[in-house]
Image (cartoon, rainbow, N blue to C red):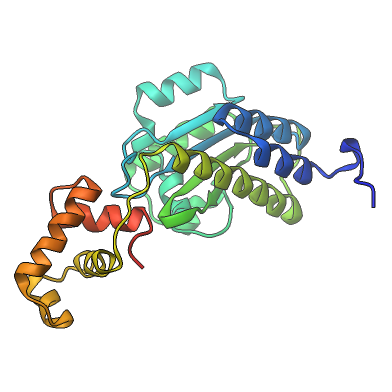
Length: 248
């Protein structure tokens, strides 16, 4: 059966094909910008959350944005709003998109967060949508979509499709990020087993008793794990093991 021509494909299918073929971040950004233009979504941002313990974990989590007024983008950066904005934090605890106007019904905010949202409303961005996305080993993310005043709010079907689009783009970005990180850490089955106990807070003595081996042998395995993971303490070893999918 012949494949349908590009112009007959749905917007979501065109996006899927574009992000699947993308081999660098700007191509994913361009695909999302094209999708949003088709959906008449004028403002969009993507935030990527490396999990605790990942080698790329850090405070700078925004990846790209387009359409927001340049003055607001600079204000957001200069005022360090990233650490005040409650939307990413709330999205990280939810599974479905929600409108910014619903935030105060969803959770309690402190004075600083309420002041931030008041400032956002003053910018006259129109309805805004917060969209959580999910990736491997806790590598999650968040999209912010500003609707402007040129169109009505998205209906339930449109929100679900946008959520699917964001999830597709996020997972492809995860693929690219994971491929760019240092070489995969190879642990033996015994090292993985012991790292799992370490991640659960077990001492060497406790692990030795469970596995019926000496505490000195456990200590040797733990140190090998430290070396392979490039860490120096048990907490970081456990977190990195979880971030790399080495701990079940």
